[in-house]
Image (cartoon, rainbow, N blue to C red; front, side):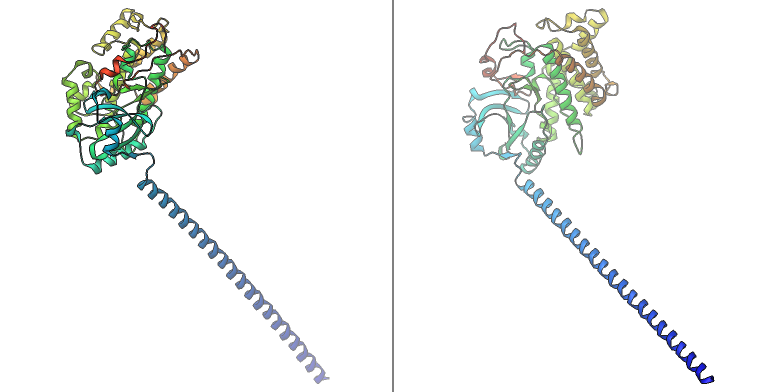
Length: 402
């Protein structure tokens, strides 16, 4: 009996040990499977990471190749040889000269079967070829629908190649040189908005704002469709500072017509800021609606508003001025020519929105008509257009309006 009990206990103990062994074996198997699963997961994660790293490296390599290609072959900037420039201008023949500015003469020519204007910087305006080339590359990248397009340059001889503007300068059109038809008030409001928008683009340039320094109707050019474009953008950066300053000083001490656009605070302090351009813009806006010379224009318009005779100041060649809108336009312009720059309105938040509003009023009652096409191209930095440009414009009747 005792032996049978002992045998039963031994059997039960054996079964318990066997069960325990099976349990441990199952635990071990589960642990091995878990380890293998973790290993597979780790391998998959490592594979994904390697793939992501390879993809990132490939994208970085492609980006660097693209940047290198742009740096070494910038399609936006064409380098011309002096031989190409000479051929385009017929060796700088006098009859191809269309303007003369503070930085040098301008010639009409043809490059790549395209009419162009070629500005030749005067000898003392020349600077290091490398710096000139760097600045041209920066300027050729700055593109705006209302900026004259810089097509290329000849760095060795300081020549700049611009798109040719068929309807000359805003100054010539306002004063109707060559007996061209007057610009309609709608076109004038549109031109004002275009100029302000392009100026805002310049003032928002990175890494630092680009101050035009020489904003005036002679430096606003008109294309075939009378779309306005600012010319001579960045020209002050392409020449040594002493030359740029001397050109500005020349304007201050030479013809009163150019002197009138210069910020009086700049004259006192020598500090040129974006608000200096706002002053020049204000004088130009007053000319756009009056077609009068700049000398004393702010005073005359201000007095006319006080006396209630503002309508008499508007360009009489335009018969249907919307006087209330023109008054709003004039009042904005007068704020721009405040003597202290801190009193002048902000370009982005005040000037551009108001000029856009006035432009939209004009475009709602569309009236375009036709204008004349001039030969001068209007590429003058000081408003002196070449004789060839003034004498050979095609004429239209004086009562038609652009």
